[in-house]
Image (cartoon, rainbow, N blue to C red):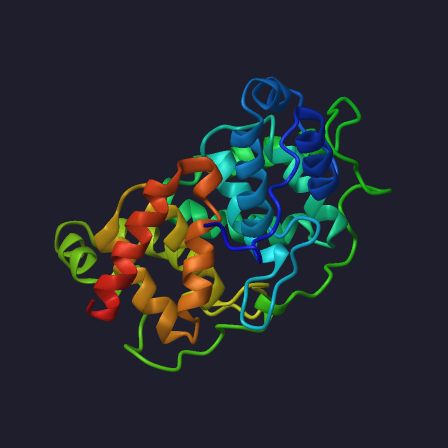
Length: 277
């Protein structure tokens, strides 16, 4: 028999599903409406899940959880890495309203680019241009566009000092790239300078994000690429900078809308490997 304490099933009429989704996110892309009218429960479940993953209306980060800003610093470059210039500008407008600047967006994108390549940064630039264009119809651009001053968010102060593990994060000190240096030392010098900048290993005081949060972004990117072994290495690095298992899991799940539960499963596999489970 059903438990009488269970909550009643929500109204799954297309109109009710659309109303909840619009209230949660503030807007809805028209292409979703075709799905809603054909299979309202499918979109209801999508909305329920993504509202939790990205903290839309009604979902608030608790202690130890990633902020909405950090979640979008993962989601935006993930969308851009797939060339999605329809949805990424909408996310950028949303983040402008949360006080994120282009510099912060590019720091997140650079950490993602350490995995997927710097060509992805040009797509981020295009998404920013569209977000600031009056011709882009989705979402609302705050007055003046990009915020002039960055609004602080929790991850700005997290993961800046190593609390455990090895002393060096530099690409040049990894076993594979030490081998590369025996073949072409100049190549390794230049590649390492770029990657160390993206991951925060260069320890620049100008960085908005420290190495710990940047590791979270790289972990999500590696899971999208199916790189369990490399994700496990980066997870160890995140832990070394004091990031928690909850934060690692949330970072991985930020890319579920773009790459599916397979990415999350691979991320969990990498986490279990690090934990010896």
